[in-house]
Amino acid sequence: MDVIEIIDKKRLKQELSYEEIKYIFEGFLNDEVEDYQMSSLLMAIVLNGMTDEEIFALTDIFINSGDVLDLSNIDGVKVDKHSTGGIGDKTTLIVAPIVASLGVKICKMSGRGLGYTGGTIDKLESIPGFRVSLSEEEVIRQLNDIGIAITSQTKNLVPLDKKVYALRDVTATVESIPLIASSIMSKKIASGADKILIDIKVGSGALIKNERDAKHLSDLMIKIGKKYNREVRTLITDMNTPLGKAIGNSLEVVEVASILRGHGKDTYLFEVCVELASNLVSMALNNSLEDAKKMVLENINNGQAYKKFVEFVKRQGGSLNDLRVSNKSRVVRSDKSGIIKNIDALKIGMLSASLGSQLEKQGDKVDYTVGVVLHKKIGDIVNYGDSLCTIYIGDKPYRNPLDAFTIEEFNS
Image 1 (tube, rainbow, N blue to C red):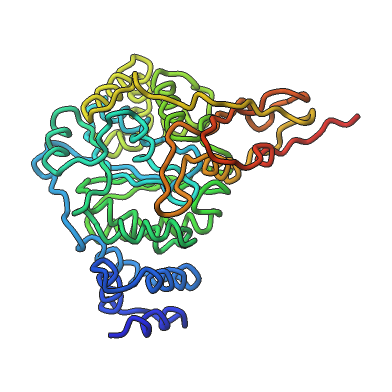
Image 2: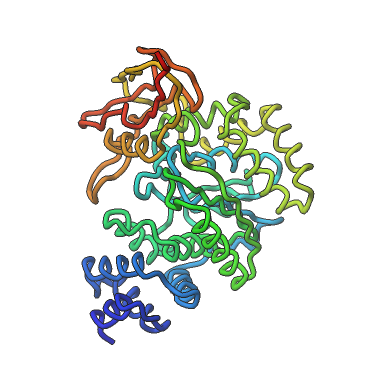
């Protein structure tokens, strides 16, 4: 086979065979296919898509590129949850402890930031001492002991996806439904869970921009799950504005702790997390969503969910007491009086990334202490000089914060 012919075939919108997909992707994993060649294929996929059979093939090739976690020795149903990513999305760190506090085992293999969306692993790494990489033996022991384990994509679990994922992040090939579906589901299948919940974020601050594409992605992931005898449930949730008040790694961990203590019950973040946790509990315990929701709210109110979060962080070596945010900050004030009509999630994500909270190119280092904390929400009335947000600053020049806010001025 010839790499150039395979790339050209996809450029011409022709279907690739299993063998052709395997040849070029495994060649990339083994350093026999160059980065620029894989980038060309990925861009052709972004532009021309993939058939269902191509997506099934790519997912299978991803899974078989490494090991698969065997969780059969763990009692009870094992669940997993994944979000397609969004600005300020820290739902995993809230939902997983809630679920585990109710006796449901949750094992999650998480990723780093992709595009301008923050990654769960980046957030966890902002906690001093936290170990994001666990061996299979450690995952199984931890699940048996405390019911929750979150680990990074290890070297031997879906290594092909890990390498492709990193290249997509820096070559403008992130927003591809086939690549998103294969990436997510290969990790979910390899992680060994029995039941999987996918939170599909839709809007300006998400990888998926519209409902049509979200439904397509949902259908694909359910089909992939059936091929591997996994129950997959999906929820489509809004990501036109940032999820929560904090955007940036350490800042988001602070917000996670606050939500788990029962604060912010009137926020969309709290609402989404309760819905996600309720679905996972319902899937695992085979009870109604209504009963599952009562259990979820009870364990938030009685402190058990937060207690489980602290136990989880401590078990993986982290120290919440040593969590730090930047000691340099700037309050951003409104330059007009009016009503906030929009807070653009993408622009907030780009602002946070420009501060240093995300990788903008390979070789960059993440600054875990920087980011944005919003003081206002859509619909709020503001006067000239009112604070809109606080930005926590590092050493990098950053974007204009006011660009993210649309304020409709009062009539004089």
